[in-house]
Length: 168
Image (cartoon, rainbow, N blue to C red; front, top):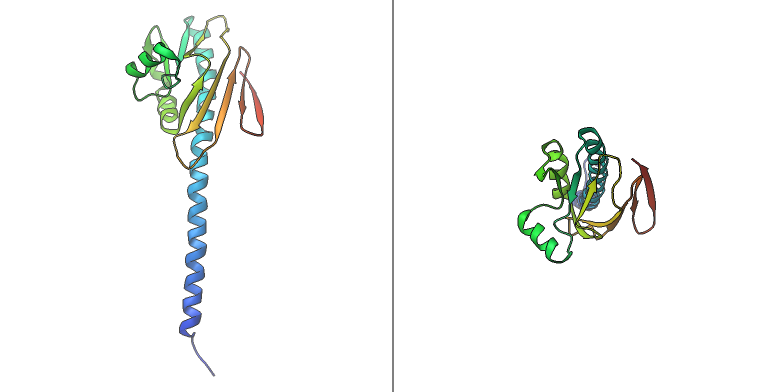
């Protein structure tokens, strides 16, 4: 009666375990990179909803600026004033401290590739201008781009194949 395993059986088992572990680790990194963009867009939506509500509550306009969006001289001056920021929220010309967490999270997960305006202003009467923003992930391994369309009542997020509506 034979006891134990041969060297070849052990070597084959270890090789298969290494291959399976590598596949799982690779897939985990890919999922993590894609989650950056998705989380960043969700935080942008939350920031938009908050800014709209905050403007109505305090009775002052709230501005969301996009320093990375390349729109002429005004865009360049925003990039110089806010060099490390993807998005900035201002009330009376000062950064809004209550959204600091969302702004940092957005800055660490996405970058604004383009925007139809350098800023969106939310007015106390509930109105705002329409804007189309294209964002990408800060991860070089996620080539996706998402478009966020903002109007007075809804935001729409459009990936290459699908779009979803969110009412304010």
